[in-house]
Length: 291
View 1 (cartoon, one colour):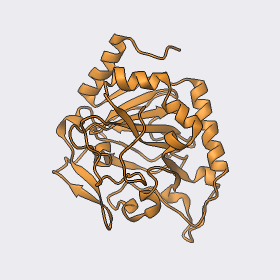
View 2 (cartoon, rainbow, N blue to C red; view 1 turned 180 degrees about the horizontal axis):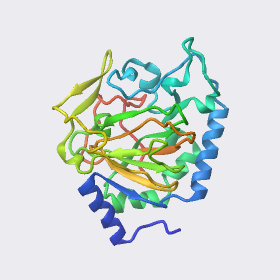
View 3 (cartoon, rainbow, N blue to C red; view 1 turned 120 degrees about the vertical axis):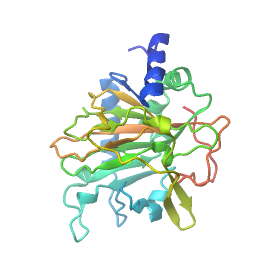
């Protein structure tokens, strides 16, 4: 499979993002790449012992993560987050750890050799520089998302730039890879076409007392059925999401998981990555790796 896009293909991706706030590229990653990532994550999970640290990933208004040290210090580490429905009332896992994890983040791209090779391959350099036209594309975070059968929770409507903000041009761009078919039944993404043109509604701000959701302006009452379109796609697809496009995913009520890997790019040239972002490197710098 060729590693680069021709000019017409690249222009179509840019046009789609400009118009809709997202682009869908089917077959962007190979079956072999999918197999490598899935096998590697299985090894990572197998070697992990769930300790007392039971960090639950929630995206609702409560933003539990805002005060969770395990979450707040995960920017340059590989850490594990559970589904909210993974525990009994007594705080014990209802089922095997493999079926209880919501996601692993946020530095697989920097610390794990298989994910690192994937993220820095030639086709991603071509994508970042030539297609998306970044000048200094930095990978700010990566996540492996499991969307477990039956318990894979809702991710409420949000804009990624709310969590990964850059001053100057707001530049965050998500790459979302379907490692399994993403269907309406197992919790594919849904997005509001064109919603990236309306600016940012909220900002998730890091303070001395944890993180707080700060309102920048009134957000419309989204109609989850009428406003959103499904971005269902087969395994091997890549979604490119503008940082300000509104998107969400429903709960996975199906018997099938919906594994995905996602990375976020920011522009490192003529922008500032503020200390108010939740995700910070331990050394206090913003020296995120180039693609």
